Every structure is written in structure tokens, then in C-alpha cells.
Length: 87
Image 1 (cartoon, rainbow, N blue to C red):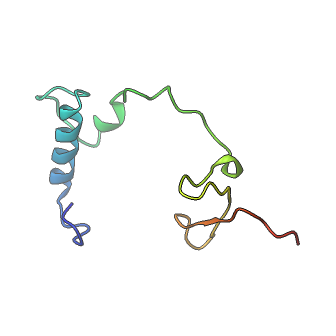
Image 2: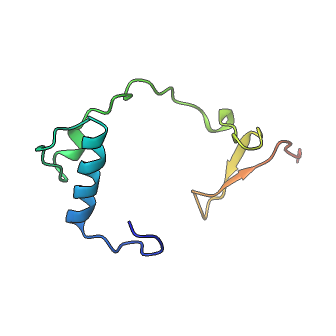
């Protein structure tokens, strides 16, 4: 997606770009069709390599601090602290 132009790609362009990236990484063949029906069926190489974690076990790699909460009004914004004050 062009920088600072979120939403500027059409649905067809997004699927085409996704197909290109998957092809370049040898996950799909060059002539495979990628769309809303086929994309969820693609088997990613490391699909079984993930270990589910609890939120309190996730650490911020930059600071080493434990993630201890999520802002409810902004789920993507993590609140991090190396010490948590007791209430």
C-alpha cells in the first residue's frame, strides 16, 4: 500500500500483491488464484510452529518489560511497565 495512502488499493490489487508475496516466498504457484475463498485455505509454512501465550507472559523485546495490560479503548495500544504498582 502506498505510504500515507491507506485504503488506496482496490480489493483486486490487494489480492494481487498478496499473491505476489506468497509466490516469491514459494508458498503458492505463479498461476494460483488468490481471492477471498482461496486465501484462507493456504497452508503457511510455520502454521504449527506457534505456541499460544497468555498476555502476561508476553514481553516487549525493546525494553524487556512485561506487557501487563491493554487499553480498552485502543486494543492495539499496549500498556507496558517493568513494575506494576499494587493497588
